[in-house]
Length: 350
Ligand SMILES: Cc1ncc(C[n+]2csc(CCOP(=O)(O)OP(=O)(O)O)c2C)c(N)n1
Image 1: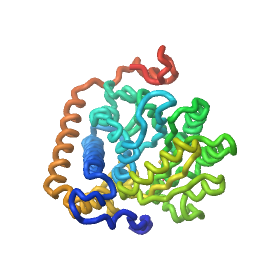
Image 2: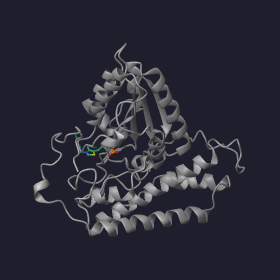
Image 3: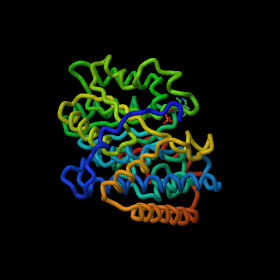
């Protein structure tokens, strides 16, 4: 593809022997990352099929972002309240939620607009998750709004003084929105710096607008430099590099109570959304690249990889079949969850 990032994998020189202490991460961790990446991909591919079969109105999601998204989810300190991490995610976050423990069926009920959808009661669309019990703020449709709301939880966490940090994800094109600038400004005020991981998933597209035609700066993360914020650029198609760098910067933010801007360069494997066809594109696939290395290192076989995929494909299909028989929302639930209206102060009431 014309404008895909060409970052060399910094971890590809790992040794070729099995079970070696020289592996970049323990074998179990590598296999866990792979397993979750495949699970997220199977789910997303099922969501696309659900859309194409006419069982959903729209699809948008995260195939191609599994290496970055899964490792982010694995490293998040999941829980409720400011002592845990706050997650301000965007619509390509299925891999992160899968790694945090979201059942496939939750995502399927959301895209199928079933009353049983735990995020929105069937009232929002694909990948617009909401998990108050895990500090996962509702995903918004207007892009980049999450960079503003992340300021609020990071500020509250700074005041609370605990170990929780806030994490925000978003696309490269959306960094043109004022919310991104607000985030940099509020995160970096001297003496009031925020414990905030500001990430940009740079797939080099904003729907159909090419990155290179819009950005004078080399990296979107370079903008953080003007605010004296630590910045990082990683190959977001490499799960090992993603895991190691995310771990390092999340520890830094927890300890130093200061922000980081991290740009992950990665693929957009099925185009922007169902609006441009949701068909597989010719871009590097993080799962294929990772499997090649795992097989080379003798950690897994081709057949084992295929079996994992088949099992997750079957699980996703079974979840869809179950969800098909579930009810649609009733008309009188239209105003539910518009305002905070339950006794626990959650924005969600089911
Ligand atoms: C405020 C706002 N403007 C425009 C849109 C329409 N829109 C939806 S996604 C998108 C492109 C976003 O591109 P990017 O931020 O690079 O993220 P990507 O979708 O590539 O992951 C646009 C313009 C929107 N949803 N919200």
